Image (cartoon, rainbow, N blue to C red; front, side):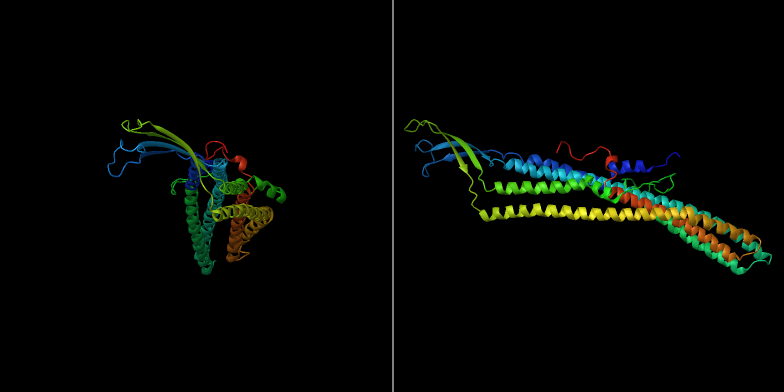
Length: 409
């Protein structure tokens, strides 16, 4: 159907246009630009001085000590400090990039979840409208019977009441469908009122998974790289804190020119030297090393906590996926055929006055509820599959080749 959208199209749009994803990408770029900032040498210092002018006269030709001086100085951090700073910033940028990749996985899960809910609501709307048409036929039938004296007024009233309930259900589903459509458009970065035409129906998934394999495969999650980068960043920060015990040094050179009218002829001077910082504030440096050591341990525990949560998420999602799949199969192969047979048999019996109208109405509504429950079970299975794919990184190979950081790690 022309103008319809597919899930694959929405996933591509989300990857390109989702505002939250774009924001994370900008954070990555900002982190990448910090690398050269922290790993660059400090700027040299240029000094100009008017030296040793007599206070009384402020003239340049009175004292041999008087002169004008220009000095150039360059500070050099102790060996290893710049590379340690680069490592800290590089690991931070790499961690942000890995977080960006994981956010893409989680966005796919949200889009799939909203897509499945949209399909469920639209199929439920079709079923409800079809049920309303049947109830309208029943209303016509009961009113005709009541008019000729072979039916009861309570049957007419009951049919109208059930029709009102179905209308209420229809309005609720329409409201939910509108909200889900707006949510889905928002996830892919489009106007929330954009029409979304679909020609897809929910169908049960036939995938089979092993819990151990899924939990082991979760190591492919980009967040695994995030925690590794945090650990390596903390280790580089610890190396930098230890290097802070070492002094920086400054090389300088100067040129002094004097007035030619001085008694000694006013010859010019050159000077050179080196100076060192004195890292005497040991308490501050001890605290910095202790903080870095704590950050290393903290990053390790955060990773363990995350993996424990991921294993739990995978277990829950797999359990829900399997249970919903079994329930959908039960409805498909057992409950729905039996409910449909019951309805058809009750309808045939009603036509020859062998059952009451209320029995017919009850059979119809029972079939309707089972039909809704069936597609709800399929929906829950598909939503659980989306959670499973995101938690276990099953979609990692489906991500388009895209990175927020230019250059290599």
